[in-house]
Image 1 (cartoon, rainbow, N blue to C red):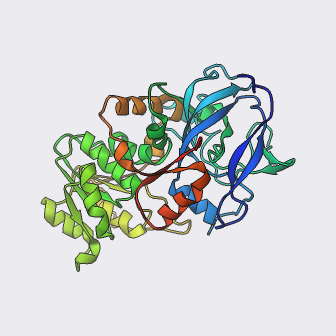
Image 2 (spheres, rainbow, N blue to C red):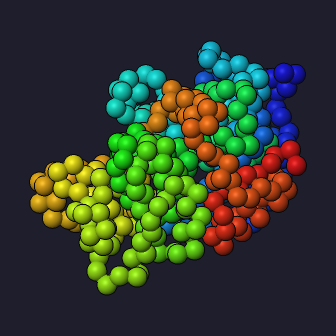
Image 3 (cartoon, rainbow, N blue to C red):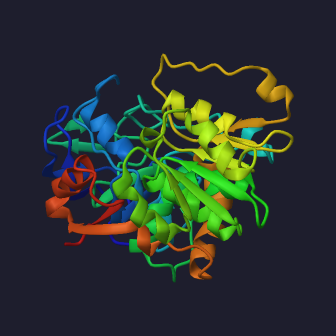
Length: 379
């Protein structure tokens, strides 16, 4: 493309300070350096993590910053040393990476790359410790190495998944974070067998993606657990067959589920980050073979306890990060599952706004309306 090697001026939504509406600004985006790719973002969506760091409560505030990490786009140019991507490739930038060289990347069991593992505090590129974004010469910080709330962004090649160019980017963009996290937690980690029962704790976007994983796996019963009964009707579209609101019972929800299922569910997936939900998710699985998977991110000082007998009685407790998917190796195949109509994504996208109205996406999420709002960068 004619812009290769040059600074690109484009629009970006800049967070200037904590909790204040984003401001659409003209930014300069520097060319990609060694092992970097510059991407034209076509669609991006808003995830709770963006809101969390925009609000920056309990976090190290880093401003001004360009947020955004769920997106789809097209490679505009590549930096030195990039051989597996070229201009025109359709890609999903991902908030965590795969260098393909560290012990984690070389292990079949891990996706927690030493070099490119999620780092919420870093606001610059790894290569030289500098930002690729600026306004009038003053740097604007990156976010999660992706910063997709910009018409163009620069990302480390290890954080870029090359996907089928036929895949609609306005749909598959949601696979670059939340949907893959929930879906993978079920299909890659909990691994329910056909006909088994699964409990899902938390029926937000990630929890419903976990339910979708249970549906695709052929689970016979999918029990949704949530404190908000208004979520129950929507959850039926994701295969959830029964609902439990812990507030409706005067005993622990794990006991309620054990009674419903004759001793406990075969698998559970916890998607809230609440310690109480984690304990319940573990203690509600059947002894002998039950597996509980933790997905939700707790507060930093949280801890939970359970009696060791729960483990000695052959219940398994697991954790997962990004659904155990390696970004470059595995995400293209998840896109293919959508293309083959195994995995449904359209039902996760409940709102769409033009880039100029990006703050509306924040309003929807803060009001708890819908699941995912896709932001159209060209509008």
